[in-house]
Length: 56
Image (tube, rainbow, N blue to C red):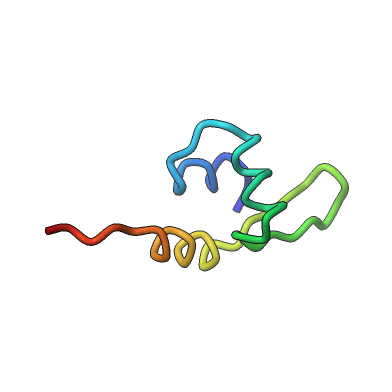
């Protein structure tokens, strides 16, 4: 999925935050061309699951 879809799923508005998650290795991505970055949907779901809070 592209940047826009990844940001929507993660509910973030900043491309800088998305880049930070990439740089820290928290989400998987591939870069088939220099300006094209694609994100792994399963990786985004795992990230969200790992950062979910349990309710009382």
